[in-house]
Length: 418
Image (cartoon, rainbow, N blue to C red; front, side, top):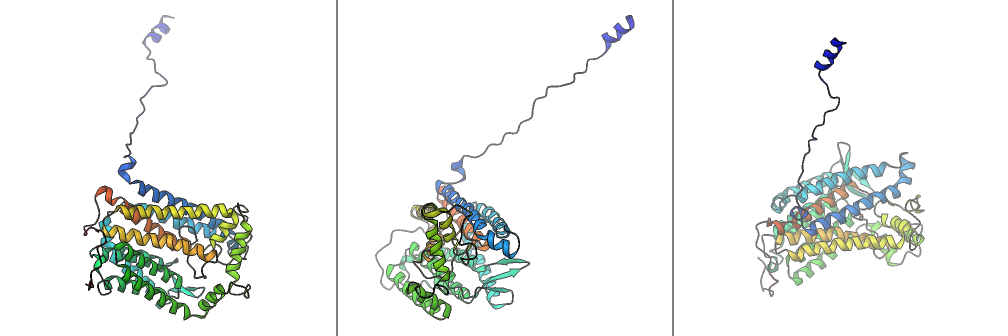
């Protein structure tokens, strides 16, 4: 007993649990006002909502066709999701660049896009789809370089106009702008894509307008562009047929040229006020051609009704309002021209697509930005928004490119071609 007592007195007590202070790491995030302006966040929020909604509608519009063709209803959705993820990452990356970087990179982006477009239309690498040679296959991936021609042209024209007082320029003084624009339109027309070339023309005219080019000069260029595109439309029989069918109201050729336009109208009518529900479209069951691409608006109208179409329309109007806020708040020539052209590209193309689906314009084949299926279009659109977001922060940080500020439009100067 004495031995046991001695052992008990000398034995150490080993605690089973030891209280330790948990190590913590504090991460201090900068306030939102230091990251971007309200316009910066508004652009990002509207764009991400449009892209997410578009991804949902691509899944709905393409699932039937992809299930029949490749046995996988998620094939188009998967490709679109990958392209959208990559595009969003690039958008956020570009949005943090200094505007001077965008200005210096303009010639490289434009030249690279034009070279790839020429490879598309002049070499066996190009692919012809529905009569248009606008896609190129490289290393197993399909790319539509004409979408990046738009992006390069926006940056290049803005860079050129940032060094000139456009309000004093005539036709000769505008040649550094008009020559790259003519080249871009030509290389796209070589692929027989009239719709994209018309959007490029709209982009150029918007850049000249927001840079302060005189109205008389702008009006003359508009008439010239209308003549060029009119001749291009008349040079191909299918375009003439579509114009004739549209002008005559599609009364006598419902099973031919008017099939796509008529099916779109019937899909919208079937949707009514509130729609038949997402996923329940009838027109996507091989009735409506290009249901997930150029005519995805018809599926949206059928599944979400007039209410869904109005919400989509208001989102593009909100995008235009934010872009105009950036233009009017900036006195920098590069910012005004670039944002104005991006506005014409994204919102102008959206309203052109809507007009085609509603039957207000003839079918000329342009996708609905952020919504239609197409990886190249999605990435290019998101890159354009990223550039606008970067310019939205320029006035806040004082990082605008070194260029003469844009002043109020002066009185017309006679003999002003420089």
